[in-house]
Length: 411
Image (cartoon, rainbow, N blue to C red; front, top):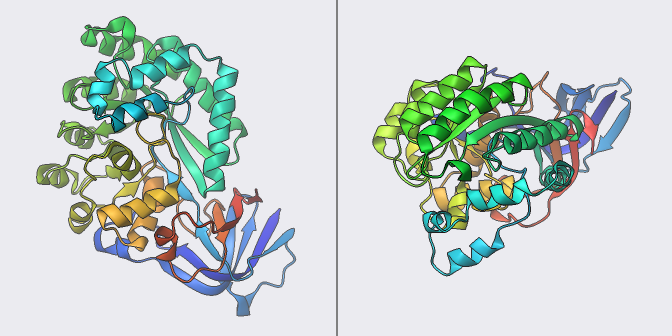
C-alpha cells in the first residue's frame, strides 16, 4: 500500500543527516520544503519533493493537503497513561495551598492512584487507557512511552504492564513500556524502604522480564522517594535483564538523579525542575537526554527547568507530557511545546525538535521516528494552512489538525 500526499503548503521537519538528536545551537533550525508532496510505501516514508516534480507512478491512495502543512508526529517519551480514575480532589487540595509532598504525606498522590488501580479490573484499565490513547493520537502524537508505577505490588505492576502490552498490540501509534515499580514505596512496606528496594530487585524485575513486559526501567530518584544509591541498585538489576534506564530526577530537589543517570548511561533523565550548573555539566558529553516536563511545572505551580541554560550549554533537550492523574493530567504535546516557548523561552523550532527527534531519541527510537526522513516510519499529521511555525505554539488551543497518518495509514 502506498499513499501520496500532494499540495503540501510546507513540509516541516525534514532531516536526511542521519543524526539521532539535535543539540545546542542546531536546535534553532528546522528544515522545510514549500509546495511539496510526500509518498509513503507500506509503513515508511518513501520519498518527497517539490510539486513540480510530482511522481508519475499511481499510488494506492492520494490525499490532497490543500495547502496545509505536514509535520512529523509528536514523540512523547514520558507518560503514565494507565491509571484508574482521576484525582481532582487533590487538585482542590493544591488550590487550598497543600504542596505535592504534603498531599503525598496525607495518603494522596501516587499511593492514592495505587489504591484505585488495585480495585480496578484489567479490562477497565485498558478501556480507560485506550480513551487516553485516542485522545493523544487526535492531538498529533505518534510514538509514546507508558510507565507502570501505580501498582507498587508485584501483581498490580504486572497488571499495568499487561495493559500496556494490549495497547501495543491494538493502538495505531507506536508504544514503549517502562517498569516503574520504584515510583514510591508500596503500602505493605511502609517504614521498610530498604526491603521494598530489594523486593523490586529480587522479585518484581525478574517477573517483569520473564513475561517480556517492559522495554525500560525507571526510578523516582528524588527527595522523599528513592536515593541515588537505591536508584543505582535498581537500574543495575534492570540492566542485567536487558532493561535500559530512564530516571525521574530533580523534580523536587537536586537529588543526585542526573548524576546517577549519566553514570549508568540512562537513555534519559526526566523532570529537571531543580537543576544547577553541576548537573548541566554532568550531562555534557554524555548520551543521556535531559527531558523536561513543563506540563508538570505548570500544574503544580513550581519552577520550570532551565531550558535555555541547557540548550546554550550545547545539550540536546527533549520535551514530554508526563500525562498522569496527579501532576500533569494532559497529553497535549502541542501545549507542552507552547509552555516550552512561553515559560522556558524555547523558540518554536527548538520546541519542535525537542518534542519530535529528541524525544524519540529519549526512547532510543530516533532511527525510525521524529523527523521527515526517507525510510523512517510514516508518522505525520496535516494541518490547515498556517501563517508561520510560531503560530502553532502561539495559538495553542486553535484546532489545526485535519488529517493524521500513522505507520502509513490514514487514521
